[in-house]
Amino acid sequence: MDKRKTISFLLFGVGLMLLGAGLGIHLLKSDPPPVDDRSAAPRNCVEPAHVSFDAPELSLHGLDDQPVSLEKYRGQVVLLNAWATWCPPCLAELPDLEAFFKEYRDEGFVLVGVNIGEPRGTVLEFLEQNPLSFPIWMDPGEQTLRALNTIALPYSIVVDRTGEVRLAWSGATCYENLETAITPILRQ
Image (cartoon, rainbow, N blue to C red; front, side, top):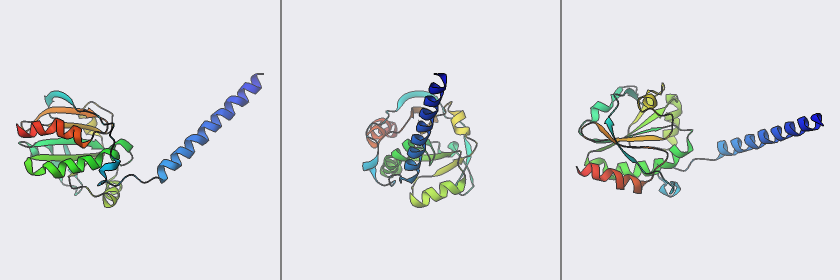
């Protein structure tokens, strides 16, 4: 009887592994939606939470390997979005982030995408297929996540013109929520 249970559990485990492997292969083969396609963006999107704390002092490097920091954008409203190319919710919200940035960049709005933990070549290859018009910073050591006390991706904050973080959220958001939450901060 114990031998039958052991064999049953073993077969069940092997079946689960095969199912997982098949799902993994399917996910690897499926292409992410193009960044300019907002129809593929999630409609079940996260609403930003109102918060109040000083913006972290982040000093990273841009794709051109030049040093960058949040301090450079003091006086503007900054959406800092931590993301990765392997993260489905990150990719799902990119069309909405791109559209919102294009709509409001002339009003003192800056969007910075901080790639978490990936090699520069991986990010450049992704951007070649999915061009973005906002700056991308590299964070191979994941200091952004530590500074924001999170392990979640995507994770976003909005820093007002004075350097105070006013909004934060974990998970994919959408254009409508960005407009509702950020435009009042832009108008201040």
